Length: 406
Image 1 (cartoon, rainbow, N blue to C red):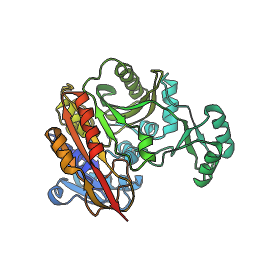
Image 2 (tube, helix red, strand yellow):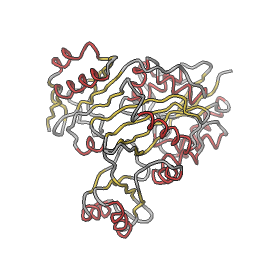
Image 3 (tube, rainbow, N blue to C red):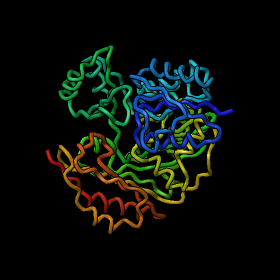
Image 4 (cartoon, rainbow, N blue to C red):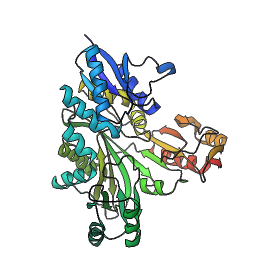
């Protein structure tokens, strides 16, 4: 008897479909979709059945979609998805249909960054000081506590969307006025963490982090967001023992336990400050973006998408994780706005790094400039040497340039 696995996948983005394909390949799975736009082409028959919904971010639409599939095929075995904006709605569907997996209270704790930081601090973990700002008085009081610069972000933001720094009291007051902040619609203010910025990922099953991985952002996320022309990189070093990784691993695993995750991937951003101390930025109960899932698989020579599917559907760790390679990804962006007119340095880049390229996506001529931090294209490289990978991604970002026309 096949297991009914409902995958909430609103749009057929390649980043989402990689996880859907992995779920499809598991044994004894009938894959059912709740979608807004179905996959097409080679993926047109990826789902054994699907329901289209009008508003894929609506909790009610998700519940209605699952109910239709339940009537057609019987009780769901698991309900899954990878988008952070849907984690709470998916958890609510699990609760409604009595399906194992992360429940709403845990999903809310991961999604609400203010509550998350309170829970982490209560567990004795280092996090940025923060406050929900609902008035000018709140803003003045928090500024007195932490000074400037500080960070403003939505309480339930994702992927650093709508996150920015303010460097003075006047800028803070202008920002909260422009955002129409109120007690009913607050903004999350945080002290600004500085230093080397990393991520920490886990595969967790049965409430226990089983394996983990690290990456480093070059430069940090906020600098990339504030400077849309910066071509940046992410490196997964081969060596992840010793300082600062041992302490960060203990910190990250304690964070996962403190927030109560059952099974799945986690993605935590953290900092090593100039004095050597560590601090957590935030943590999400989803796979990482920016190609980090793909790079994690390349670093360990495994299928990381399958590892996610095994964790959330089978509640099992898929494979032994041995760090065999260093991996890096250079994100291709450029100065200016408009549509992509040309990409220079492609031949020179290929001549220099082509031997070690594991995957690449070149910018599409004529496409509008991406508004995301991942840019218009990317190049992923792999090598046994971390230092070599650092040199390779540096060569890519220094050589390949995107040019735009208004």
